[in-house]
Length: 154
Image (tube, rainbow, N blue to C red; front, side, top):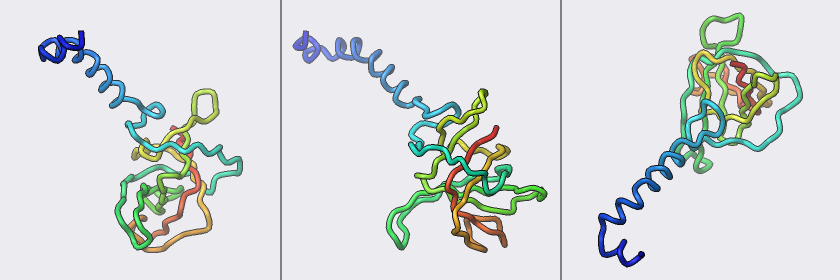
């Protein structure tokens, strides 16, 4: 059989094409959780049990990566609207390793990824002690925080 596949490319194409199409369909559409695009990093960390630092609405999500002064980096910069404001008033820097979860119908959380964040989503944000004022990662004149965890509340 192998010799006939090598001698006659039409046989190879006829026999292998359905397998290759199935493989590519599965490989290119393997989301990490519902709503996530493929190849999004998902943290294995357990959800934090402390209250969030704040709740907000997502206004803008941008991916940033490259070589910085400390070497290669990749992160999501999320502009949020923290009530009572009605315009973006804070930024959250989410390095790729930051745990992101999505609330499920049962009231628990499922693992997700920062690349699942979209404008209009409601989120709960936990941040650490680091912050910066007037950076590109936040709306002009506002504060950017370094996220420790995000829960998408839908």
